[in-house]
Image 1 (cartoon, helix red, strand yellow):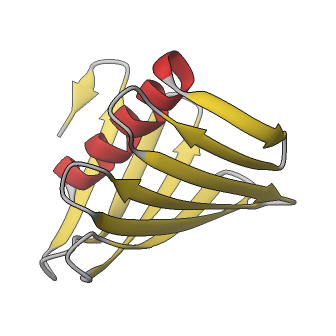
Image 2 (cartoon, rainbow, N blue to C red):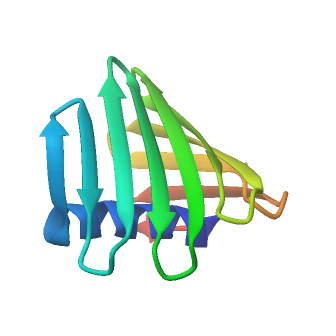
Image 3 (tube, rainbow, N blue to C red):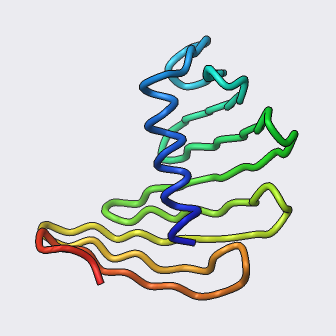
Length: 116
């Protein structure tokens, strides 16, 4: 899951840095220099992302909902496996837990001093 979350963050960062996007702020289609495409819909407290990896032809998706300081994300990996993550952020601490696409539970707590 850590790899999947890191991949999602990396994709989001790559999209912001290298992707060309079309559409409105709440509904965008983006493509990067490698031919990957991402459809992003944002409405209210919900963000949905559907992705296509041009290199292997796989599709993936995730949906996030934010309630106050808590974000719940559910997704389907390119291999069809389901995963989920809950992130709770408070001043000075972020907790994340869930189940990765291999069915394994995970939990992580981060502060300004690092993560465990």
